[in-house]
Every structure is written in C-alpha cells, then in structure tokens.
Length: 440
Image (cartoon, rainbow, N blue to C red; front, side):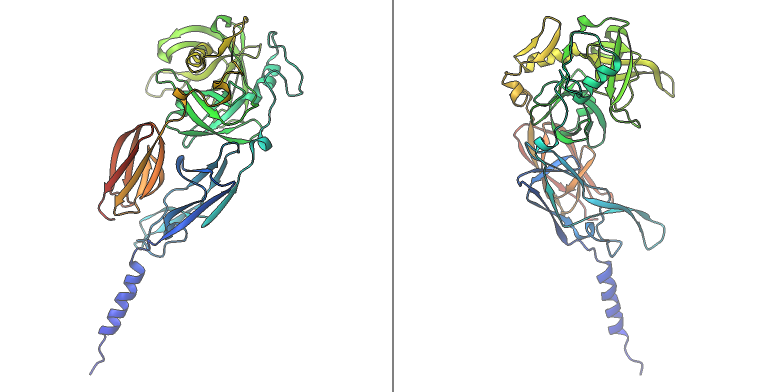
C-alpha cells in the first residue's frame, strides 16, 4: 500500500501560505533632536514634534519577502526645525531598488528607510547666519545708497540679501526686506507650500513659514525666525526711468546659484497680459528659478520682483528673448503698508519698515501670521497611503497640520483603490476624514 501524501501536501501548502501572506507588521521610525521639541515635516507636511514615533510597515525597512508585502513606492525627506535654530533636511530613504513579479513581466521601483532611529543635531542660528548689513559691502565699507554704482558693485552689495527658496516640488528666489527675516517672493513660488527652505549665499539652510500670499498679485511673504539679516530697500516706481541700467539677481534652473544679469528698463506701466499691478519690462535675462528675485537699479534699490518672461504664440510656444517682466516694488509697498503701520518712505522715495515697529520685531501682524488647521485622517482598512495636494505624506492613521485653504486629499492602496475629497481647512479647525476602502 502506498504511503499517504496528504500530510506532505498540507505541509507544502502551509509553507506556501507562510511566504505568500502579506508581511504588514508595523515598525517604528523614531525621530529625535537636540534640543527636543522640534517640528518634523515629511515631504512638506508637518507630522509631529520630537521625539516622535512613526509607524510604518515592515516592508518599508527591509526588502519585502513576497510580492504581496508592502513597499515604499517613493522617497521620503524630513525637515526638522525649531525657532532659533537652522533647519535640517534629511533624506530618510535609500534607493530606488527594482522589484520583479513572479511572472517576470510586472516590475517597478521601491525605496527603503535607512534606519529605525534618527537623531538630529540642530545648529543655533548664531552659528550659521552669515552676511553683512545692507548698508555695507562685503569688505565692511559703508555704501552711499544715493549714488550710482557699477553693476558689479550693485551685485556685491545686494547678493547677501538674496536667497534661494526650495519647496516640495518647485524652486525660486526671494530677498529679505527687513533685518528681522521677512522675505518677499512671487506667489507662484509659495502657493501650495506651508514652508520653504531658505538657502543664503553662504549656503546656510533656514526654514521660512509662508505668512502672506496675495490673492490677486503674484506676490508672497515668508518669515524666517531671527534678526540681523541683510536686507534691501524698495524704490518707488516714480524713480524708475526707461533706458536706465538694471540688475537682476536669482537662482536660474540649470544654472549656477546667485546668478547676476543686467540690462535696461524697456517700458513701465500697466500690462494686462502679465496680470494686475504695475510692470517693468526689461531685457535683463530672467529665467525659470529667477522668480521672486529683485530687480535693482544702479543705486542698489529694489524696483521690482522678477516674475515672468513673454512667451511666443502657436502650438509650440517658447520664451521670447529680451522680454522679461518684473512686478513693480510699488505693488509690494502697498501690501506692506497694510501689514506694517510703521512702513516709512524717505524723501528720496525709498521704503523701509521701521526697525522699532512691533511688526518688524516679530512675525508679520496677526492678520498675516501662519494659519493652520488639524486634520485626522483614518481609513478602513488601515495602512493606506495619504496624499495631500498630490504629495505623499504618510499612511493612515495620521494627524496632519495643514495651512488654511482648500486641500485635496487622496487615500489609496498600491493596487489603485482610492478615496478622495477636497476640503477647506479653516484656521484652528480640528477635522476628521475617514476613508472606506476595499482591501488590496
């Protein structure tokens, strides 16, 4: 009589199941800092304060054994910051790695978390802030702002106040307009971001909170904590002359940082195709990445914010050479007058924010302070990916701090099952979203 094979079949079937079952056991990622109590953003969304423990599937830490296990399908970057300290930006993942399904046809990429525990040492601002006061050049010599200067002198004096701004999915330029860390830039650089990484010419990295975005003008303000920043003054449009030499400073894409170009003022006035406001047309080169940088006259004063270039018509539009547009500093001055009651104009037409005003020694006034709401996102079943405005921010359940305004939420599994909603987040609100999904 043949021996029974049933026990062997059962054993083989059990072994197969042990390898085929999803490995979804959660593991902790611990993020701590010195000093503690720092805020942590992951892919641009604030998730916790240090020390904090974030739950992720085991497959995010080590190669998944089976094709059914959880994989991290995108890189993760953390920003850790605290008032009075420089921001630290850390890549949490390594990769990409390749995975191939058992059929040999389906394949893709995944990332792995580098460690279960990360400690971040934050540097005090006093250790990283560099630059000189606006009224002194790089050698510490006093500068007479009322006299014309050659282009190289304008660039030398102004460059310490011009910064590179880095968001979650875009970059641009900005410049300090107060010694207390207020930065002017374009709205299209800041829109959709709650904060931006600020890189000074010395390459020190700071964190700026978005505090004001003009709903009509392409204009925004951000705020870095600290004092003693080099800054630029603003000149009235009345001082701008067609034909005068101007200097643009910025960080063009695919170019070197702190790039300087020069040209002349081609025209001044209203120009509907560019948008509301008063515009300065110039032939100084303005490229993608220059957005939000200053346009300066030869006295070293800011007369405009570099914003856009003209585009040709037709089916394949291209930028037109020598036709760039800067939003006039007058438009920024009008905004500042609403936010800063102590904004002053000098007899020469320059505008500065009075250093003794309460607004200049803290954040911009209350009406322009950062406004956020708290959103608790859960799902059934759990461990679904959360996307906010198209950016991956973690897995359910999670509690998010988001800037006030309309945000689009997506909760989905890797198999494509998705739940989505748009929600208007109000300042100080505490809301819950519960997504009901079919298991993958």
